[in-house]
Amino acid sequence: MRPLNPILNVDVAIIGGGIAGLWLLARLRQHGYGVLLIENDRLGAGQTLCAQGIIHGGAKYSLGGQISASTTAIAGMPELWWRSLLGKGDIDLRAARLLADHQYLWATRAPTSRLAAFFASKLMRSRMEKVADDVPAVLRHPEFRGVVYRLDEPIVDVASVLAAFAERYHESIVLNQGPVTPKADGTLTLRHAGQATWVIRPTCTVFTAGAGNAALPWATLQLRPLHMVMARGPALPGLLYAHCLGASDVPRLTVTSHYDATGRLVWYLGGGLAEDGVQRDRREQIHAARRELETLIPWANWSRAEFATFTIQRAEAQQPRGNRPAEPGIARDGRVLAAWPTKLALAPLLAERIEEMLRTLGARPRPVDLRALADWPRPDIAVPPWDREDLEWS
Ligand SMILES: Cc1cc2nc3c(=O)[nH]c(=O)nc-3n(C[C@H](O)[C@H](O)[C@H](O)COP(=O)(O)OP(=O)(O)OC[C@H]3O[C@@H](n4cnc5c(N)ncnc54)[C@H](O)[C@@H]3O)c2cc1C
Image (tube, rainbow, N blue to C red):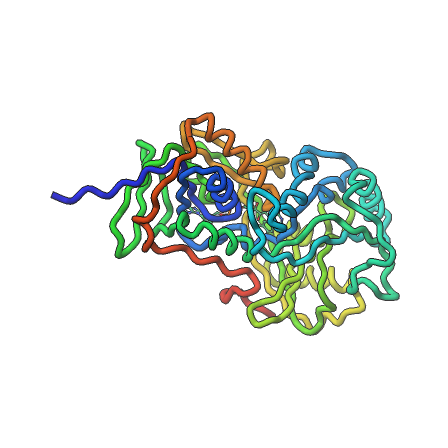
């Protein structure tokens, strides 16, 4: 007779180790729950490691001239992240790296761009300040004609955030071979070559698997694509963390700066360029990116820059007409939840809401002994886009 698989009882099983799963793990562990997070690839392998790392406070969502539900939900996030980054919050992220403690928003000479900035600055009075002397070095040029605002929104190095969680909660994070799916009786199977197969019996299960939540037939999600661009090379005029405003309520271009594994500076370009770019192929998207940079920062020599692009889907709770959700989304089927933070910045709010739901579903803090899994394989941290080997630079 085959021996029975060993069984592990936990309060909460979390499936998926992006920012949503890791922040939830940290919160539940802090509050005494017995939690196991199961990842089937690398931590952050979905959307999280592709994020630009901006901890939004809502300015981006007030460009239409109105305080929207998105602005309200996200307003408290920079402060909450700050507390964690300084080790003063519930969640300790002192080991994570800050890329910049604020970013900029710049309006071009175009009246529509200036108007969007003006209205946003009125709405975001405490968060957004017009600057004259503190213009980022890249924009400090006699040819620059725009108006610059400083935004109270930090930028984090996303890989270091994931590493901080992975290190601190190492024993609670395991690698499964293949996607995890719940069985009808609520149990999960944990497998890996060379290991005994375990049956995990959670009181509640939370899927924070991003696009992988689609495996749950009741968890209706939407996918919204982006065509992101990266630029590198000696042409880059320095570090920049900024949104450039255009005519719509989506920034025309969002620039963050990163260093690749060889120490080269890379500009990571999103915003309207990435949203509109889903209609373009790689060559056309690189052409569009070059044109934007040459138009907005003409004093740099862009002919010497190399570019790469990739497409990625944002996975979110389904909305009427496929609009961007204003808040994190949670779906439920019995004691199984499926959740999407909507933004990296909103992961703490999502974790708070999930914990409240778990309590109503009967999950109670109690210690769990994970020593039997001490030798189980752990997932690595995913590779950021600028270090991916499958992308072509030209
Ligand atoms: C290009 C881009 C830029 C962005 N920039 C920002 C930004 O600057 N600021 C901001 O606030 N937000 C940003 N976002 C949004 C943010 O990245 C996402 O909202 C957030 O990362 C989603 O995290 P997640 O944990 O829900 O999902 P994911 O990061 O997708 O993680 C899901 C995890 O689950 C794993 N998984 C999937 N299926 C299974 C399964 N069956 N079993 C086990 N594991 C599974 C995956 O391998 C993955 O590790 C950006 C998004 C994109 C795409």
